[in-house]
Amino acid sequence: QVQLVESGGGLVQAGGSLRLSCAASGSIFRINAMGWYRQAPGKERELVAEAERAGTTTYSDSVKGRFTISRDNANNTVYLQMNSLKPEDTAVYYCNANVLTLLRRVERDWGQGTQVTVSS
Image (cartoon, rainbow, N blue to C red; front, side, top):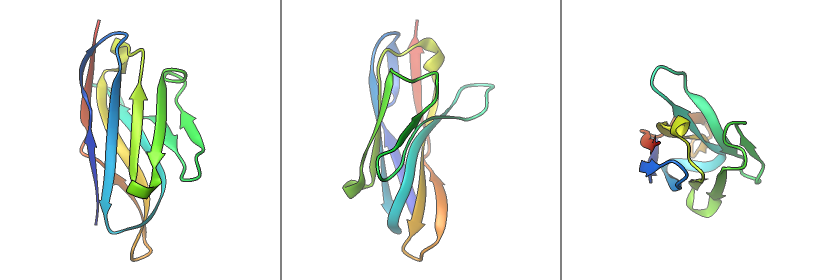
């Protein structure tokens, strides 16, 4: 079983910054893609940013130039540095990982979510 534990959410004023962290643990052989999704009230969950193990990154258009995703593969951790935050970034942010487990099964795991609130 794989666990993803997120931290770093909170309340910040518009224009401010936050850094989210997500650490994966458990039955992990290798983690392929790791990323961040978010879900605002009344909206569907959407991709924010994703990083492949080799370093390729993908960002949603709404966060390009403001957010930066990075990984520490040795520690199965992914980070999201969020700068120039806007009220529309307010959402629950979820960590996601595509994991090859020790039993050589491929699974997609989610964290419990962390609230990010940006005040105007």
